[in-house]
Length: 209
Image 1: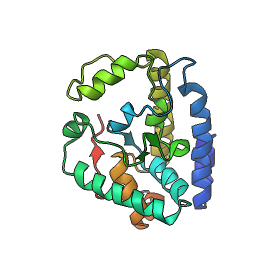
Image 2: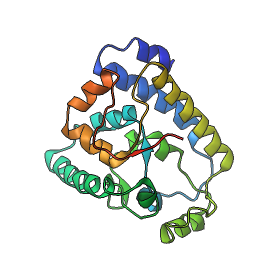
Image 3: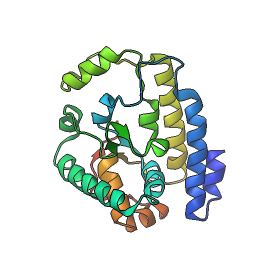
Image 4: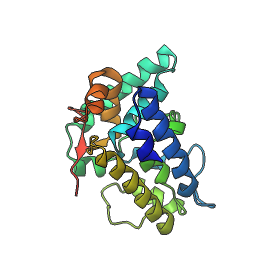
């Protein structure tokens, strides 16, 4: 369904609607019945988040209705975040605790529009999350997620990404905060993406393997 919706999309709203439907489908498989995740726990919100341009734009349009004072505060956090992470290598960022700019009072301020990487993330072991937070350089520590669900979500993420690639859209893996900063401050990013060009020119990105 996603491929057909994207292939026939002619207006901005069509692209966002197509991704919204894909997200609804993704959520059906991404949440195990029992986890140690609780509202207000934000240990995972200090990790680097890799995402794709279409997810960033979906998030950006969801943030447009924010009251101006909240939007101004968000833009300031995003600018500070982008300045920091674009000076780091992917490894340096992955081994540091850097708060997501969308994190407000320990909660995600854009939860309903969060990327697939955030939706996939979950934990059945709070101690594993605490260890990762307290030891960000330990990249070999066992993850706290349900391996089967995490694997299924990863497959679905790859499938949807492949659909965008098949249709010629930007395949670059971007870091969420720095890409969102560009999306909200430079309208040309969306026009480049619609033209099947690289959307973000300054954001941190992760080389494809």
